Image 1: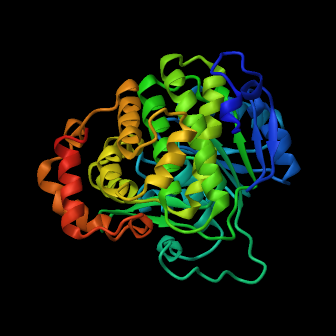
Image 2: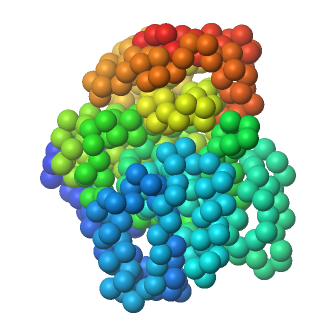
Length: 401
């Protein structure tokens, strides 16, 4: 029996309203109100002057002011860098690195949604060395660091339940000159603390709750579908999927429901860990759409999901049955699973085509060519030709479901 099967979606659920500490894969502090511990946590890590990194859409939100006050009250010096776009660009990472050095900072606290996580982690990769950002590109050889070198301390505080980006160093950044998104990372950069406080997600608008929640749904599904034997990631993907399927509709319909917010934050985190195994064509196409048209990542993923599922799930009945069981579906067939996913997307208000969010029909060939160069395309469960990816993109633009 999974965790998700033992809990009921009620507003006073004791599991989601209690504090929990987990040590895998990095130190994780979960529970309502735990942002209040940030000063003590920083001191425990030997920090005195962190740089807060967030996106420009979040810089005036209450959680930023509260974080600054908590750090100040603890006697810590801190500054704020918020020049991060919804789809972070390489030039913004360079500006963040300059701010880190100019302020003599000793750590980065990345707080916000996926763009803040990506921006903070990318700045952390480059802040303490002279390597170019693209030296850390995922498909290249891992750059050798000087003996004894340590990346600046990194603390991650997600304020959306979607990206699951808080436990790893991977970050998606747009290469402005190429108009493409690339993944940057280094295996030696790990968050010293991921702080999951569901109270920080209470103010998230209905649309962003749905879009980021759908992003987590895609992470769980795509990670589980990646070929290869990785039982740790597979188990996390299924449990994340169970939690997301249970709590996402309630979080959208009842935005003040703290248990639902906690369930989604936990499910998102699990799905985010799971996709260390890899992702698939939903992300490969979505990355390039986002890089070119600045669309919201989770929303783009959500629209693409049914189209890619119909392509990917051919001959995958065993895996589909396990995902359907995690979602507690009566019909565990491929068609039953896809129908249930589409019904969930309808329930949370996801548009039915990329065209509805401003993606033009004439970009399909260009987007498809770029998507096949994305690292996520390499772990897709079914090999796709350029012509097939063009068709998938055209379908998603015209009518995804």
